[in-house]
Image (cartoon, rainbow, N blue to C red; front, side, top):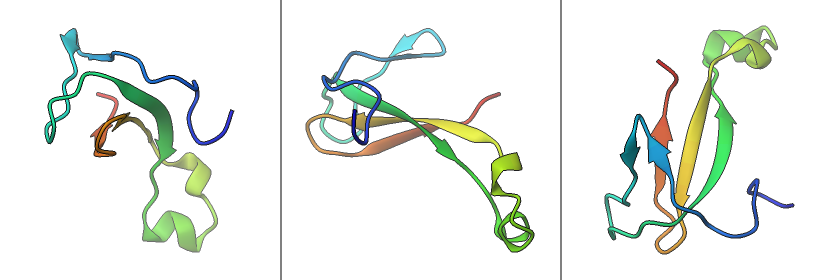
Length: 70
């Protein structure tokens, strides 16, 4: 599948709100998850314990919108 979960960009909704790119106002995105880790987790080889973020990459300009779980 490559870098993204789905081949075609799709509309996205975050917290009940339709997402629009902050840069170019486009409404189609590629979605992926990112593992977050800090220096201490990296030092002890524990990156897998860090939180994950949802990332929506604008299909027009490539700007990445990051959302942390609440």
